[in-house]
Length: 152
Length: 152
DNA sequence: CAGCTGACTATACAAAGCCATAGTCACCTC
DNA sequence: GAGGTGACTATGGCTTTGTATAGTCAGCTG
Image 1: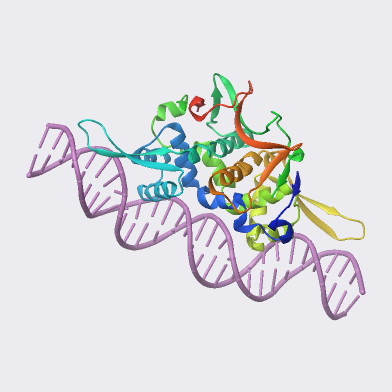
Image 2: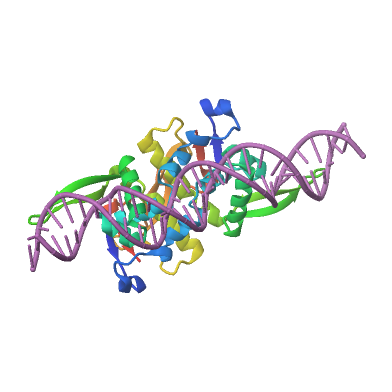
């Protein structure tokens, strides 16, 4: 991989990227295990508090605090709804931002599948065809790591 | 997204996926901020201890312990080398497993770029063409979240 | 109107992650 | 043989993440 530095980073040279790096920002926002587990369930279609807690195995306290954080940063949206004859409920829906994290979450699954032979691998398909998380250029190529250029 | 459960998971039904989930396994292995920052530098071509520590801003203690863990799980390989007239050195090289985490790390960057307007966005290109981290099926389609099927 | 359910909140605590500072140790150079 | 450098290790401390257990509160159901 070839790295090109421009702008402020070029001046900083070898100095650490720290909080300016989008990777670091993302890790601070959604880098915890609990967050990723909740997102996994959101992709499966879970929207309700108790289901999130039960299916992730997280405690209710953790679930509450993480869901709140995810709403704060715009990954989930909390909406009120009411089925006729039932009481008011809340549901947590994925926003566009939340949906955009899908490649990260399933990229992790793919990596485990390939390199750690998990007891229950998790396969993605589209219309019956296997789906992979890949780096793809606008020409449709799937470059190897050493063919990529990073511009900061 | 449609979720199909088969095997042991189908019997468990709504029970938590816990440690059996490849996503959870991956998060426990490489889910810390320090790990992802070190991997970022590995993709940039860094191989030496002090460079990892300086460029990530992590302390040497953290760097040492994380690099060791990454070697243990097979993401990096530690090799000895010696330039003529110089002392013995060590370097940390990406393994295939480490390279396979690239979509996850740059997927995080892509998400930050899109949703958090970072001061220094990080762009990937291949032969001048922008590169994206996407879910892609073997027919070349790029399915939306709701067109995907997960099989566990 | 007692009880259940969904969606939390409160409190107390353990473990992990990360930091700062300091020290070590082998080997090379002057 | 004194000092420098690369690659760590040791110690102590703070903060975050997560757990366990218990309590709350609104509103529907019997």
